[in-house]
Structures are given as C-alpha cells and as structure tokens.
Image 1 (cartoon, rainbow, N blue to C red):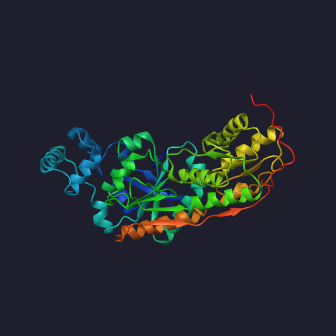
Image 2: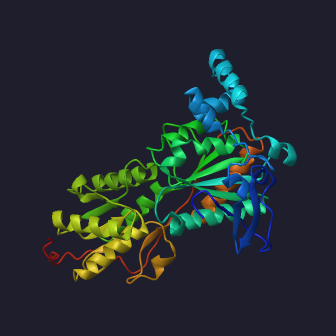
Image 3: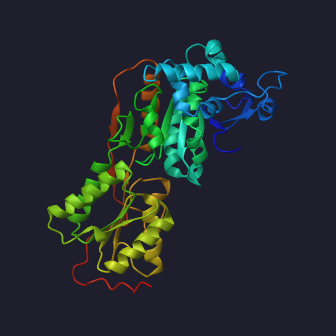
Length: 404
C-alpha cells in the first residue's frame, strides 16, 4: 500500500472492521498481520462515490479551499467558527460550501461519540523511513502504549503532496483522528505551525521547536553529548572530530553546542573545520569521515551523532587499514540493536527511544481528553562503553593514508 494507507496496532491477529469513522468515509474491512492492521479503501471511494449507490463525486475540504482561493486551514476555521476569520471571509466561504454541496464528515463523530480512538503518526518523507531502526523504536513505543489505552495508529508520510494539500489538517477536520505524533521534524517543517495554537492535539517526538511552543517528548541529547566528550577527554583525546547532523534539527544543535563548549573548556586548538555535516546514513558517515581525514589526518577520535554514521566511519577506517580503537576511537549516538554486534562493538549513547514514543503517546491522549498545561518531557540518556574507544596514543602521530 502507498504512504498514508498503513494502520498499525497491537493486539489480536483476528480480522477486524475498520474504525467506524473510517468506514463512514468509504474504508472497507481490515485485516491484521501480526501487529499490523491494513485498512482497505472500498471500491466506492476509489471511484469517487460518496455513499452506497451514489455516483456524485464527494466535495472535499481541499476543493472548497481551491474554489475560494484560501487555504485548507482557513476553510477548517470557518467550519469551526474560529474568531480569527473575518466575517466577510466566513460568509463567502460558507456560501461557497453551501453552493458546492460540501458536507463535513460528522457521521463518525456522531456514531462513536466524542473521540475516534485513532492517532496519526507522521513520518518524514525519507525513502527507507519504515525500515529505519530509529523510527522503529519510537513507533513501537507509540503503538504499544496506544493499544493499551484503546487507540489505533494510522501512519502517514510528510511527502510534498501531503503537505501541499494540507492533509495534516484535513485528517483532523474529517474526523479521522483525535491527535497526531510528529517524528523526524526540523525547523524547515513550517506546516507544523498550524498546531501551535492547540486546536489540533499534536506532539513532537524526540525533537523540539524554539519558535513554536509545541508539546514534545525528547531524549536528553545535551547530557548524552556531555557524557561522550567527558569520556573522550578522560581518555586523553583533544583532536576530536564531530560527524554532525543538519543544524536545522534542534537536538543536533544541542550536540554541536556541547561539543564546542567542552573543547573550549580545555583550550583545545579546534575550530568548526573539525565538524562535518552529513546524512544520517552509513554512506553519510563514511563520506564525512573521509573529509575529516583530508583536513585533519592527526584526528584521534570521531564522535558521530548517530549510530549509522558511526558504522560508516568504522567501515571506511577499516578499508583504509586504520585500527579502531588503537589509532582512532569512534563513538556513536543511539545504541540501536546493531551497535553491540559491529566489529569492534560500538561505544555509544543509549537513547530511550521506545520510552519516548510511549510517553509521547500517553501525553497526547491526556491532551485529547482535556489536559490544558503544555508538555515538555525530557528522558535521561547514558553512555554505553564498548570496544571502539581507547586511550589516545601520544607516543607517535597517526600515519593516515593520503585521501584522494
């Protein structure tokens, strides 16, 4: 199935009906495979049918917005009598809805009461997001907690067309979901601004925003970075390179800031040329390591801001005949399952991702049910020391092969 058509939950493996609110909009029956619940659209909705036996195409919120030359969010606010909308705009949009025959999807709400008992998980538009171990840990925590609290999960991806069509607003307005959990976010995700006034219950998972006061649950990246830097400096390292993530991610900025602070505190003669931004992949880690070695062949330790980048660094160093940890120490940041099984096993920061996902889900449901105070939860992290780090070698300078 395509993005946005996957629904996962925990529990029985018996076939199940789609939630009542989804059935009302043309979703058919559902079948579970293990922990995965697949909801199928009925042929009626594929053909544009709006009810049993009707042939008239349904008018969507997006259709109204396009005709009125306003945003989907504006139409939504008209539907909810939001005072931010001027009277003139309200009347114009309302008359247009009447003329077009737009019918808000209130059936599910009337059948099932106030709540749909469905939450959305919004993933970034990454090619392998569904197979990524980092997102897998977060989603496992979310799904397990949701199941225990009587909720199902619908997974969406923030692809360009999803954002352009403001589906993240429409799934609220059409009563498909009660709340949304946003994963893999960054400062460029301006579409999340719609959640800042609290009208649509939302949680940012394992990140936070300074410009918008959105509820969040996040690992303590600052503490994790401090533990890494303190440990490496205790081993005698001063020539420490950072394989960094994009600075538009708040938690990545935290790691970068701590890295620079710690080195400044010991008067290490370093500058930002020791930092290489890279993709959160093995390839990204290998490429960033190659660039560091070109600029600083005397590097003694590499601090990667996720485990995949660290594994990429290990792979490149092995290919070059550079011994880890004798010649260069390598530290990661995640402690995902493979970290203990690479060679050498990876020293890394353990992030409680499952617990963050679980807590974010619980706090979102509390918000849906009436909690008013904002949430900013931070869970502690800890360093796991394995075989990829050692005392710095001070008796001789590392002879690093020339990089092409």
